[in-house]
Image (cartoon, rainbow, N blue to C red; front, side, top):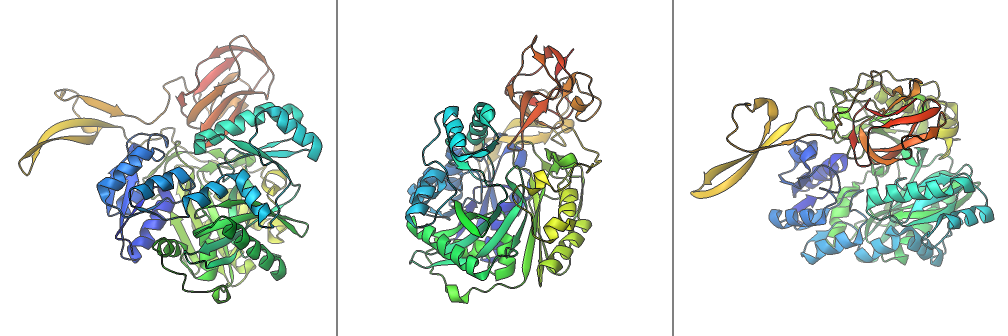
Length: 591
């Protein structure tokens, strides 16, 4: 068994892995960016190493820095969590070249299944059919148009090396193809470091059902039941549950067997998830996620199996200690992803900031997996998942009522969260009757009248710090030490040592008086959240119509369109691509 595991991730999933490793008697190593130096996963780990930088690209996606932390720590295994490099074959190989174990599938399996195009080919060869789509990388918008004209609109552009809805765009018609492809590729490049995309027919009212599998190094492959993840917005999940309601045992068995065939087709080992779309009694292969899923706790709650523990044991070359016949499920589990987003009017606007209050629920059958505590800052530069609330009940209805109770006990201040929307979803007759699909949240869940009034902070940081370099002697050896000191403790008269301020990215531009004032018709277009400008679509002198997109803002790994609040002429453009902006910053003026 391993002696020390480095967790190459942050937030909730890093905390999750650290806790199981500690229960197994294994030491843990955390890595962190400048923004995460005091994060919960850093505080819980036995050791922690700085990666530096602010953005994911500068820190958690910097292979050289991760590999250096592995060398310095002496870790003999690396757990990638989910996201970041969890599905990157080159990263897995680089770790193995150090003589360190990657807690995940073999690099070859990641290559086959991590590439959504090659995974479709492999699944088809295994006798598992997918939704009609392409198996070649898109080269131009004309291919999108031709596919839509042949198979019917809408169609979906999807990231070949991504997941979680990142880099996915639904294209309604031929006129939208150019902008949709450009936006999908830009977001995929930002999230996964690659922008290759492919096409699929977009089903009208599908359910998203996925099968959890675990495979060891000795040919034992087992499916552990399914999860229904159909409650989504922007193709990202909000509520997940297990088992899938209304699914016959015959279909469940067929889906589980199909998942195992897909896994064996790529020589899979460790935990993984095979995802399907289900509609009108038929299921279609969607993709395979070669990692632990965000929603894995609902499977743990109904099977009584710790999936992280299984991952570690399989990576250590231990055989699975149970067979398919031993897998039993008990009751029903539901998970709500609590994201830092304002769901008012169904817009789900990212809401970074400092958590000033975090009252957590408890009680029978209630579990909270969180990456933050009160006082922590949810940064615009990373994913917006704050916590996952999971409940268990003897059946779906008791689990639903327990979730409503638990969500009602959860109080988070300083940021907006998705909780008000999830309360509405869980009480909606369509959800109660399990009649929802992946399109329900945006097309029929009734969030148009939901207005959340939350006092939010506009700063991404509670305090700036400065870097001070000092000379010290350690056991008689002269060394230079860098200290990070709160700026308000540094005397303005003490200038004998060079100081470099570290500031979170908020722009020093004119601020509007109201949040999201682009809806007020003043012509002073402001941004409703902190983020980074990725594209300006207008120039001074351009004529625009009310409601047209003038700018693309990226916040918490999501692209958001900023709209003109009135028709007129652009007289000022105050930002450029790459600029960091804060809530209420005026970015352009329409006269």
